[in-house]
Length: 356
Image 1 (cartoon, helix red, strand yellow):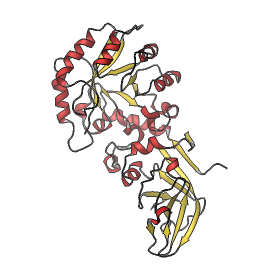
Image 2: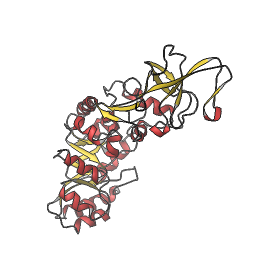
Image 3: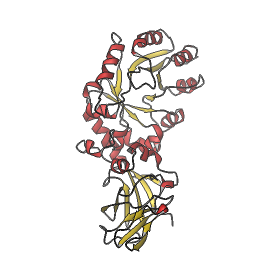
Image 4: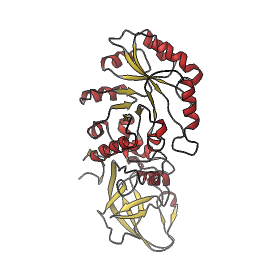
């Protein structure tokens, strides 16, 4: 028998979350971001749930080609652009749209031999300080792109660093408007956080990522409680052992948990080799036999120990939800000092994953 751990991707939840995006930004088209193998869900598993989108955004050329092989004929956007002149052959062959964020990329397009003009998203650096032209250089870059016969449509693009936090987007939006003053073209600015909470930045296209997968851009599940978003991944396992320990006994590597009284302890068939965070501390939420309880002691490679005090009826074979519809992935991530994005992307290949 296979080890009792598995992950399920909920296709209907993906489609539902896309409808939430459209409700939040009813006048915008949607780039559904499926980078990192659809945030760990698997591109092939996520595609059916998101096929009503207007376009897909991703990083990897191979994943873009796979979308074409799945039958997707609509726009595909390379969010980091391309890296070598040879990449342009694939971009041309598969009619991809690419971000352009530096002069080196423009130079490669100018010297390329393409079969048709290439649509681009010209990126402005409005404060994230990763990719893009500074606002005072943006007009010159746009004029250079517009003069290039190998470039077709030019969309104006930037990315927000604090749309999910107290600083907000005002300073970046002001920088964008200053840099784009007098420039015609569609605008693409909003990530998930801006799609949810900053309608003034929706413009022509929004680029939701994490919200499509039912988690919060802020990392706090309470922030999306009333959004209608649904969990798109369930990681589940079973109890494979139960121990009865005495007061003063310890649990796991390093003996980091000390029992303050007699207690039942469950052992779950999941560990850091499955993608569960090793640094998750005692108290990280987990659901056993339908009851929310806590992890105790250190997460090991293949096992997690849990407190069965509130789960009186739970024995070997009892179902365990690591995260999913009943336990927001953000709650697990927050307790573990990380974010839901990382947990989704970290699910190991050894964990069987299927779409429902």
